Length: 137
Image 1 (cartoon, rainbow, N blue to C red):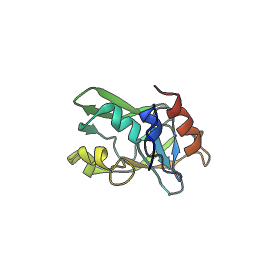
Image 2: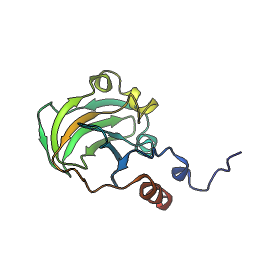
Image 3: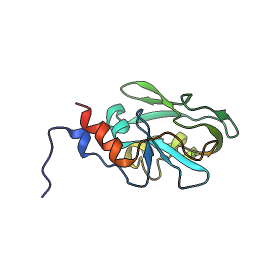
């Protein structure tokens, strides 16, 4: 039986194969183009998403750009892109039904695919990201 920790953020799912930004965005750079979405922690903090404004395919982005607008019942938040590249695909299912992000942030709730400029983006691995979550109270 799993014991619950005093920090609920430390108990959230953190898939090993993904890389993470400190802004709670995940990147699967094992794929080409790389896939991007928001972490379970980000979903937990925002609550049920009601609107997602995706960028256009072909748009060039830099790491640090606010590229997606996420609207929930709690707030409107930008998704800050952790990598530089060109948008190759956007997940229209997320625009049509933002709740898919809430229910499956690491699967069907992916937001976009991007052709990376840099083969080694500066991201956290799963263990480093878990460490970040443990520091959050």
